[in-house]
Image (tube, rainbow, N blue to C red; front, side, top):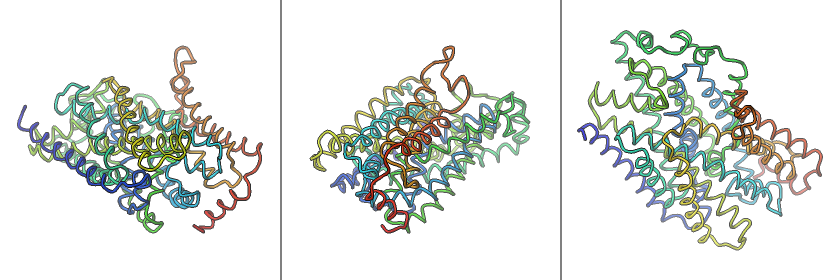
Length: 512
């Protein structure tokens, strides 16, 4: 093992130890289910902002998106544009109203509980269908994060992919298992800061080296970029051909997913008060704008900086890793700093996986076990079931991620579509449409989830799925199918009763 690798290993060890210590510290404060799942609704504005965005972006931000831009060019930025618009709308329109409504709706701790309380679902159908949907799609989402961690350790230390995957999964598991929501949010805050610093610094340093060797364009000419340099740098080109309007619309549709992401929405529910929420909005929007922009920049500059080497066959998702290693072990030779920046990639991976594990645990323990199976379960047993669920979900996600050829982008895409189509329209209608009712919401959640499953997983057309054959992102279809079903079924079934309407009006008038 070289001295550079040893220094990088030291940085990783310190970082991972810090995450575990934070989990152990917060474990002492978890005396109730509300503490474990929402931190007692005591989250500060800055922590909420960075935690929400760090848990949102995952390894996809530092590996999937730059890799896509690296391989095909700047035409891949439309996903980033859609996500930015979605983030802004989520913070401006959803965050405050959702926080008020979850308090008014019997102090709801989870998204499924909110749906149940919002529509006075005494049979708990909404609770059950929402919880099952969360667990199914979060299995895939968590697997994407674990796969990213495996690729990171494999690339840096040359470890076997499965061994690398095991190490990353164990650390995430330990601090989520111990510390619950506040441990996750505190580590996410640190991780979000580290991610942003890495995203800003690394491409700018690489650009400085490129200026001394002819610049970005000259370097790109040596890598045979698809469509030539002009096509590669054209936002309306998809590789070597022009984008179709449907393809651009499908990429922009990623932004619709925000309205239905339980691990992001739960941050809104946990903020201390609406004054803190206002602080969060500005911080979160600035963070995501910078992060998405520089993630796309990394793809382009990375292609030029690593030239004439060209990463292919899935290795393009390691472009940021390869840039950091080259800068800090070859050009500048400060490997400990490189190790810190590589921890930023690990931070992106961990910040999403921990949140998804916690939301899955809350759905299983609070919503299914205490909500449906054993209604008199006390907080101590809820916490026990939650921690067991964290173990089980982590193991199943680990099994899914065992394939070293797993595509981070593909796994995230499918999970994002499923959650966004199932819950996005349901959340919007629950918060803003007075006439929405229980029957419509149940039908809408089921329709959105099933549409994505059929669209992405069942090969109907000549051995291809509908999504592969048409190029239309399943979220775009599933979201509007769900929305139409909610509206149609709600109008065809009885209107909500007076008590439900009174709660809606209280939230709308800010009487909470």
